[in-house]
Each structure stands twice: as structure tokens, then as C-alpha cells.
Image 1 (tube, one colour):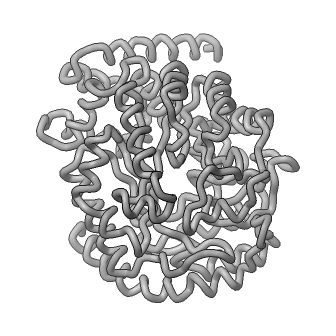
Image 2: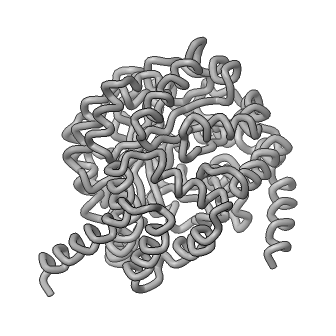
Length: 451
């Protein structure tokens, strides 16, 4: 069978299933799930699909409520594009494509690529590492377009933006959405530049989703991001909700805001505002100007660990805890295993929080970077700890990052004040030592219970 015939059959099948999205959700849920199970012929994604069978049969389940809200709260065409690009292209179709490249080249091929469109930002947030890059760096449209073309050839259809503030580049964001309509795009944004006009553009292209940074309630958000930021963020959420667009929240938890950010009132506020997902990020002491006092204590991190799991059982919002959810993704996902980061200077870094590189997109292709020493060291070292509550080679296993950087001759990518790897190790080692006994206690308790 020719490739063209296969593609035509696949397109027809997708068109058929998308018709279900116009039906009543109670009728469409079982049909969509049955179709996805048929599409996943080899069962590669069965572990992701199986839980939905119980969810769709329980109307009182918070996940059922969340799924149903995608019909009541989201524009129908946006919902269809999100399913086609995220569920099909990014998750189902691409997994087989990436597996072929991994087998052929024996290197990591990422599920997603995070890119800094610019180092410029309209805010100056406490503890933000992006500010250390300066405000004059940008990845040109042609470079971004080429990265996406290289990525999709190898099966990467998910692209995330950070910065700086990515919405400084609104026009290029929309242009890339148009040029790559089969991809899904998400931006980590402070939200203050979202207005009616940009929301209308989002509604038109349908494949762009913002994750808005909000650090708890007004006092906590404004303390870190500047006076008046909270109200601007709430206004952005109002616009997106009224336009029936998908959006979420991006939440950095620190020793200062963790009580507010982990509260039920905060989660309820996000749900009421229309957010469908929330990323929770642990503060990282990156850069020579980092503020280690913002690192949560072991007790505070345990609070977040327990609260997020509690809310997953009760709140209609999808929550991801970037540091405490290692067990669900088998440890560190960086170094191209699931994702990587390209900064505004073009440096290809293992992670948004690992500012060391041995390649640059202006001098190397993506595949060349994946096969170079630093990314191969990641591949060989993962997972960096059998306790998945200590997944990071920097924060919880700083000796791992220190060793990889030194033996691969990777360099600091901080343009303003390069950070010596030994200095970063010295900041992270005390935290790792404090967290180890608490993480071992939590890991043993949860896994003994599972056993």
C-alpha cells in the first residue's frame, strides 16, 4: 500500500471520529474511546487509554466532569483541532514515528520541544532565570520554522514556548500556528499581553494554548511579578473563557507562596476562571543571582506532593507537578527523552532548568544535537535515581549533572553571568541532602501500599 493511500485512509478515519465531537458528550465519549483503542493497534498507549473506560462510566467522577466541560466550555472547532493535533498527532501517531528514529539512531527523540522565542520580557519577576540572558536575544522566525520542520520529520508535533515573555512575539506565534497546522503549540506566559484581538487570532488558528503564570492569589502573584499583575492575569483569563478557548495555569511554588498555591481555594479559583490544566513547577536555584531562600523545605514540598494527589481525585482540572510526578514518567524526561529546551541564543539545552549545552541550533541539526555527548550522557544516565521523587540530575542528584557537564565539555549558556557547574552543585547539594530522607519515606510508603 502506498504512503499516499495510507495517508488518505488515515485522514478519512480522523474525519469520521471528529464527527463525534458534535454529539452529546455522554454519547460521544464511548465512541471516541472505542475509536482510539482501535487506532492503537499494538497497544502501545493502552496504559494511557485504559483509565478513561472507568471515567466515562462515572458521571460524578471529577475527570468525567472535566471531559464534559470540553463540550460545554470550549469552542467546537477548537476542541476538534486539539483532539486531532494533541491526542492523535502528538501522542498516538508520533509515538510510532519517533520509535523508528530512536531504533535507527540509538538516541533520544523528544515528544516535545520547548523554545525561547525571545529573552525580552515586559516584567521583572523575582527569581526568574530568564532575566539573566539579557533582553536582546531572539530566535528568528526562519529558525523557529526550521526547528519545527526538523522536529515533525522525526515525530515531534508538540512545541512549547517560554522566554522572556513569548507573547512579545505574537505575530510570529500565529504565523507558526498557520504554517504548522498539524502541530500543537503552548506558551508559558505571564498573561498580561493577552487581549481581545489576540484571543480572536487564537480562535482563528485553533492550535495555540496559553499556560498563564499565576503565583497564588493577588499578594503572592504581585509580590513576585509586580503590582497589578494579578488583576491583568484575571482579565486575560476572563477573555479566554468568554471566547471558549482552552487555557491553563503555570504555577511556580516557592517557600513564600506554597501555602496559598497549594490551597483548595486556589484550585477552585483556577477552575472557576476556566483553566483546564495547571502545571506546578518547583523553584530552581539557577544562575548566579538565584535566591536559594525561595527553595521549599522538605515539609513544604511534601505538602505539595500530597495536595496535588488529593486534588486529582476531587477537582475537575488536570494537574501536573513537574518535580513530584517523576514516577508517572519514569524519572527525568529531559535530554530529549521526552523534551528539551532551545534558548533564545539557539543553545540546545537538556532542560529549561539546565543551562549547559554542547550544541547550538545555528550550527547543528536537531538530530546532531541528540547524538552529541551531553544528550547521550543523559540517555545513558536516565533514570538518575530509582526513587522517582528524586528525578532531577541537578536538584536532587547534583553529582550527576556535575559529572555530565565536565566529561562532555558542555558550557554554561548564561550570556550575562556564566555559572560554574561546581557553584551550582554547591547550591543544590544541601537541598538534595535535606530532601533525600523525606523522599525515601514518601516513596517507601506509596510503593509498599501499591505492592
